[in-house]
Image 1 (cartoon, rainbow, N blue to C red):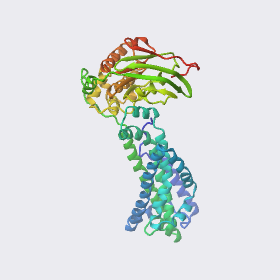
Image 2 (image 1 turned 45 degrees about the vertical axis):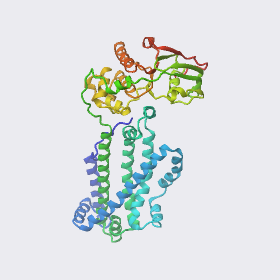
Image 3 (image 1 turned 180 degrees about the vertical axis):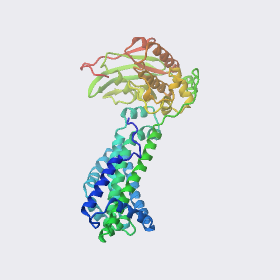
Image 4 (image 1 turned 135 degrees about the horizontal axis):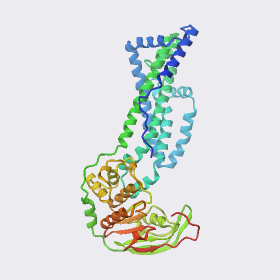
Length: 477
């Protein structure tokens, strides 16, 4: 997951560099010594101050600011919207490829001339800003969406997290840095292209018209003063945008401070779930063939299990233990065979990977998959040995063993009919492992449980399910 951008929104250029180029400008003005060709920085600044005292100056600023920002906002809205559609539908991305490539390649002047055939000159800068900003925002937003961790997406779908919650907690934090970059670039392009459109179309009352008139009437000081105005407006808009986006990113990734919880508290949701009596039935797996990375690792596997019991899946490395779990949970389509008895049951899982939302605290990770109060989430976490002082920290600051316990707590807190544990206790010391396993077995009592482990101590009291090793070379399952 991408980290929040650390740069301060109003961090400017080094003062010595700005002073250097102002001195170069002043030296060139003195060298040319022709105010008709080049005025000094002081002359341009003085003229700008004079213009700022005129009502027409602010009217022109308001006109251009309104029209260009309107185009920018429309470009941002369409860019993000079409990026979402392209992310969901491959054909939409392919359909837009020629359009975005063409928009990027055509010169601004050509766009402006063509646009004058379609719209009035008063709407010209809005249309041009939209056209130039759209492909940049679209491309960055699409890249951001594609960068969303696929394992977290899979985890969210398995735990049946509503899309609205996924959007807020998963997609937006991933999208934010890319959108931040795209919008910052686009707003500069919108100002450049929008003003260029106004210079060509010369709509009455715009900055572009004032620039054009300054050039026609050889008012060089005015030309430089209006150019400085455009630069200042562009910089201020960009800085304000960066400030807003930086605040938004921090808000999206800000962990909440959890409520206090008693170490002896038993989450009410877990008590209710554990008390539910599930009907006993037989689940059958028939002639399963499944592949990992294109190579078959499970061939012709069949077995039957009784619900409400605990099973351990054993076999050497490469025998397809994790692949089997993925088939049973419905995450992997088998080549052949029938696993429907399992896939129709609500699963919960501890993956081999922790798959946590790293910028959230532990309670937030649990609440991401279950509608529970923070106190209930913290009670379970503390039963698994997470210290109270660590509850307010994002899980990115946790040790490997602490992250593992958060992943176990998440699996226990979610409603399920079958619990799948894929090497759940790796990274835990012996004492902690016994403590955590006791909680798991207590809270999953009466439910069907499948455990994958290489440590026989973790499988005491479990019924064995053995996998036949594949004939092909060993592949990590």
